[in-house]
Length: 117
Image 1 (tube, rainbow, N blue to C red):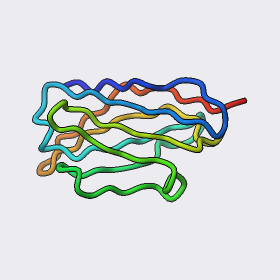
Image 2 (cartoon, one colour):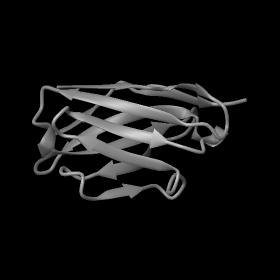
Image 3 (cartoon, rainbow, N blue to C red):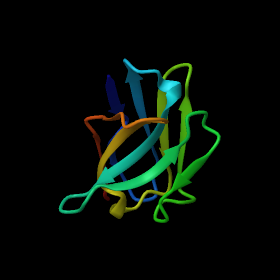
């Protein structure tokens, strides 16, 4: 199983980025997907989740209204559209796949997002 994130980078405050996570080696449609982030010196935190069919999403309070999670089960991708970025959004962003039944769970290697002027 592989989860490969991409799309991170340096962006100015107020800017936008779109993160992508490509999944392989798993029955993607059976996995709930989520994005997490970890800033230096802080614990990893949940940012957004999406159900197996994409029918339901949830967001951390700090990103609600600015971030949008989506998925394409045919292509085995999950995305995170990030708008109105703030310096406090700076972190390594990780993609996570969790099986809808059982305990199988996988992580990507992370992609750095830096919001700075």
